Image (cartoon, rainbow, N blue to C red; front, side, top):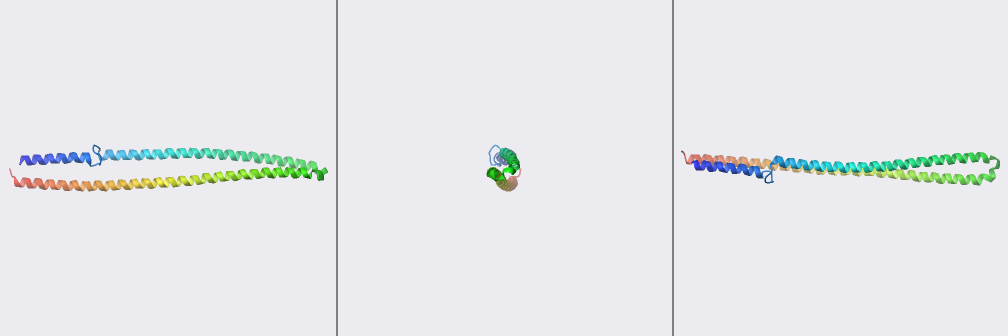
Length: 193
């Protein structure tokens, strides 16, 4: 009878050791250690995402700085054009006495001014294109963030499945315990002391 109880206790000790070493799916690691490891991995992934976002924002800031410089250049060109127009007006005032002779010169100056205005318009079109490109890049970044959120939702689902599996293991251990109790009861009934 004592041998049977001793064997039962030995079996309980062995089952307890097996539970501690293999229930997490990785021998030698507890469930808490596995979850800590998974959380650390998620933290690392999150930090990598934030680093990439910081790099993207830095690049965007540089591009915006370039756009600002382009706008500043366009403003300077507009200022130059205004000065040219002012010069043309002055010359038109001087030409009043000899209009017929000077109309050709005035027409030439107006043509140059129109050319400069066309250049300014072309520069403004480029700036508008750059602004549109920056806007489109921001939309792509939003799509990437949505994809990352979907991946993280997938990880959450995997953790839920792990929780379900662990609940199944708990039920199995409860059944094993009830079987061991019945065996102990039968053994006690068969060999009374």
